[in-house]
Length: 102
Image 1: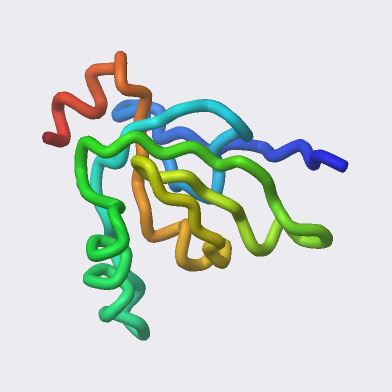
Image 2: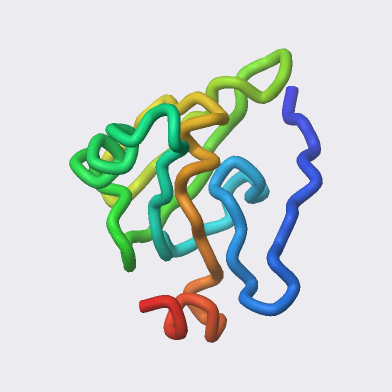
């Protein structure tokens, strides 16, 4: 069963967290920002392919609570916890948000 998600898009930049995007909608990674309590997440996410400019898609969400998310980045597929996915900022590839952040 698919679950509806209410996306939160920054009104001026069009950037949103990976955890908030709709299923099967390709986005482009803009940046990765790790939480203060887990700074190593930024390096880990970068190492597995969440680099600026890379295409990313959320394929499905776990039930209940939408955790974990199954995410395809480039040619690889990973399961990420919502907290990890929230570290990845994405934008539409056609929007100026990605170009401005690059």
